[in-house]
Image (cartoon, rainbow, N blue to C red; front, side, top):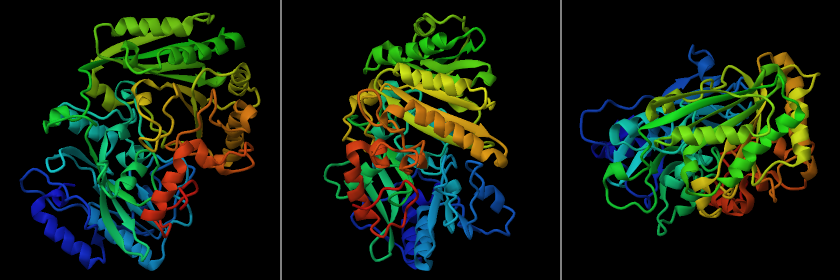
Length: 535
């Protein structure tokens, strides 16, 4: 919503905050301004309880494995409304969780102990803020809406994910990557400031705006949101984006400009006729290509691909992706497919289409998974799989005692400009990996939970059998991705490595995140099963 961004409504917002028992951080930068004009008031706050017909939708917006039972869902449309809701929850001793797009893979929002869910569906604004010379994005805005407004309004974009329905709130806080990241880095590499409702030691909710400016006393709060994950330090209500090093205040030059068009593609290798040697060759060819072209720069950085190695009942393996702009896009794709197919004894089927960039970004990769019961896991690769790891992958994708077709391991191109940033510059520690891994099991029947959970847990454990069942950072592996959270990493039954879960996600950055947690959330109001613990 836009009304609470206008300077002529700042007094009204401040008065409402004071009436709700909320204070605004006096050291923060001034609130953002929106272009002049008549604007409607923000949506909400709306209180939705179990007897409300809207309740079922609001508590089931995520992974179908988890449906919450909060006392209420508070749908909010402004930062002041968020602060008031937080203050009320603290005063009444109720645990809080926050939902933006609803794509969390674990029960961080739908935990049974959560009594109030703050739903950011009413905070979807995207605009240029001349006071900060940056683009403001409210945390409830979906990535698709962010792309649409930035591109149509100013010809710019953010290198975020390929699922347009994902909310900006959690996506950004966890680092955020997507098809343009090999060209332009992670979303957080362009994060200038963040607005957060925090709770002081005395239980007072207040709003803080923290920037990346070295002189900002709240800079550690900004840094914590560059990969520290959502639900840890407070409620993010707004982000501001401006690429580092840019000069001037021309909005069209403050963020990356996407290509006019992209060459989208799907490549299919059938299981039929593919033996274990062919399978291993395909996977190894992909990781070899990523190692060869994993450094920043070079035309291959324009190519993004996701190789989905699927279970045998699914019929085959697919490579989906795009080449960003350029007359040589077809050649880059042909060379890529040839490199991946080298030595593989089946012939791939290739489909391709050149479309405007925005059309591709809004189309995304199709299914957002919300109709499934899901369990996911993740990892990074600095190099290629070992032979033993590839044998484990093949075994679990071809097991005859498990017939579910919705099981896969996706290999995503990584590296490029992502790796031009120091691991300490942001909270995202993985800055020399070239492949991101995404393990998935999906099903519909709750009665089958145990069987499907056992399959993916055994799959992951066996791939990382040499390092205690988890991707311990080393010569090959490089930990996991907090935006694909997996509570099994904190379970000694599945993590026998002796390496704590937070090292897998944050590496050497965890102590700094703990210090930020102790400062900005000293009462540990914002918590979940993988939340940062105060130092």
